[in-house]
Length: 126
Image 1 (cartoon, rainbow, N blue to C red):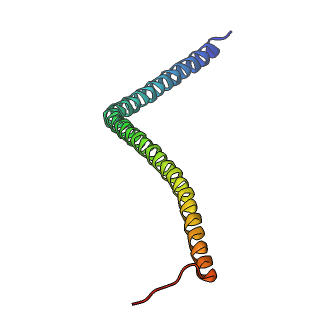
Image 2: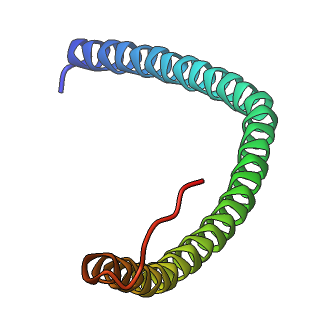
Image 3: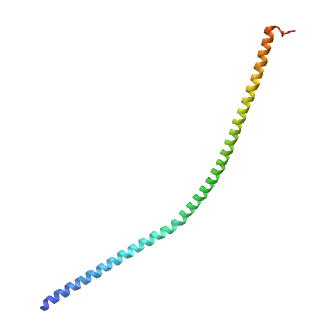
């Protein structure tokens, strides 16, 4: 090859080398920027984690309190349902007793009316 071509090739290689160095510097700058941004995000996350964990802990405590309150209310409802069932049973028993008493009272009234009708009994007013 003639020497003039070597000069052109060397000039091209030098240009390519300079471009490569520029590109590497640009990539290094971009990586540094990404690294800085990532570090900033991590710092922000680290600050938020304590707050988030605190809120989660308080939410779990509230949830546990509500669960225990619901368990207490559930027991109270079951107890009241048992009381209502007992009242219904006693009302049924009272109904049977009242039916018997009403039957006896009706029989006595009918007997007295029959006695009045047959003349075996009289009403005395003073």
